[in-house]
Length: 622
Image (cartoon, rainbow, N blue to C red; front, side, top):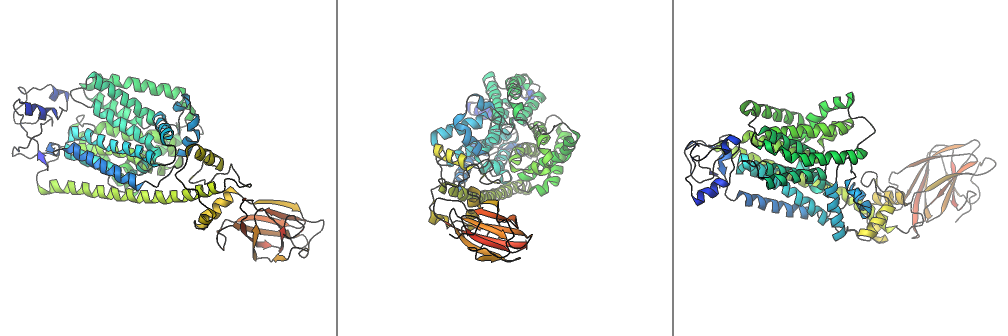
């Protein structure tokens, strides 16, 4: 139920005092007013007590009161937390997380300050270390629960920050959009993003604590300063909130005396950067070059526009239009209110700095980097602060003024939720491939021919080798089952064959076949493969196949395929050459399980070849 706040101040009473204290004055001037000096029947800078009456005048969005709005927002957060935790129950560790899993057991005090991907990551490292000590890696759900707790906390804090100045309804709209922000899915469904979300949560907490009017008391201000420090210790995203808070305090004459709260976090960050941070900064190029600065011309608007489009559940294709719309909104706000724009100016500074500072490192890879959903999530917080401020003073009376924005917000939330579901399904499908790869890796952990330092998957598992995976699984456990050879045959054949070749590759080497040219296939080599043809054979575990070109001064261009599951090769071609007096020896890996491999030799060009099944290059048979 929407209730307009009373435009007149109530007489002092116990009930009236409670209502008055629920909404704080919005400026130093309004804070200094008293019931005697405030004009009757008028609002004081929007600092209007809640009530159930109606003065007959047109009300604004900031005047709308929703009973128990905080409890309603908490309920939405609880629903989102449960739904997302259930939806992500089958996820597993991914990409950068394996670096944490590999090294966590050896972390020292210094390790918690060494940058990860250029970020100060003390807080996420502490969270991962704690969860690994308590639960190991037997389940990914504790890690997702920690991430989702951060996520719903960010949404609830955004609600509190917006509600203070813009009212209950706009606070609920902003918090709910952030809660189901599908275009920021990476920060919602990948636990490793707990660092980015930590910066958002502590940054919003600082805005909430230090945004109190009249100015916060010393304990509250100290808590806001501590929140900023924790935001910086979570990731570099904390810098943008530090600057936004600084701008917010600087623009308010009364709260300007709280600028001291920025000293400790700022000094701490400078100390960290000079002592540790410079070691993790990309050094392959200078960030202050003409090319880099030119790249920012496209990178920053693309990032800001993608974040603005993401708030409306739209893709990066809408970034130019969204950027233009957000810019026009900000300019109009400045024209109407100048410096009295609440958090719109700090948010505008924050989002521009977010993509400008990020672009100094990432713009070299193109503007597509600015559209990453992990950046959209952060940018959306700043965008929502700007948009809600622009709607704050709009009149709500009349059906279209009430129903249209609420309906639009509902559509946006539903659209964002649909995108979030789609992204979660795509992520789950991708991790299903990883799951199969890790199960196969564990199955062949005792294979004599195992290549322990091979990279399992350069796209999904670029830092994971069999040696690393075995070490992590032995130390912390795994949510994955131990499969059997029978189960292996049921897995997708392409994944099985690819992973077996990665774990146990063919060993192809040249050898001196004979002192003279071989015109016909030698004894024991009954198979001849003509030019343009191919031959399929079945080869036992650990066996050798030799290939010799036939003819005087012959050269053969060959395509080799090996596979375990299926009747046809899966396209993983290996191109080699054989020539007169120099044959090829192909050694099949010993899996330790007496398997039979499929092998195809195709003569793509050149002379025919003799195919010999045996343990040497002279054609002796098995």
